[in-house]
Image 1 (cartoon, rainbow, N blue to C red):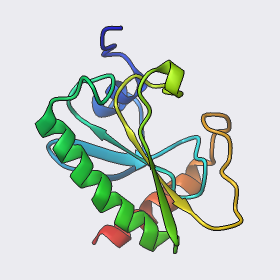
Image 2 (cartoon, rainbow, N blue to C red):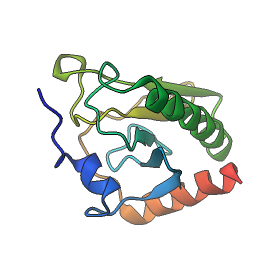
Image 3 (cartoon, rainbow, N blue to C red):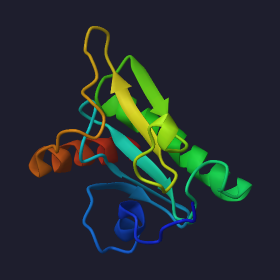
Image 4 (cartoon, helix red, strand yellow):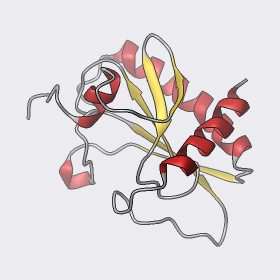
Length: 139
């Protein structure tokens, strides 16, 4: 499949769709997942157009991983999480639903199950509060 420049993440990058931004640099953007599996679920995407990890140039992948690590530290702190789940899905058979490479950063607590992926929209006021918590932990 060829990269679709009208996928939702490409549209977020162009500012056509709002998002609850956590951080942004010249290579990457991190924002709250609108259908989170846990409070604090954050997505990290490269600005480079690529469907999956196999399509992303190594320099863009390196920048994305660096941001993912930075965001993971902040999410861990902001949500007092003893664990962090990092997920990256490649292809519909693997569960990828948006075909712009992205990393999921999900805080994990023992005894708390994850909510279903891509099922229920979160309240935007709550997402804004969560984004503010992560941004504060980045500083």
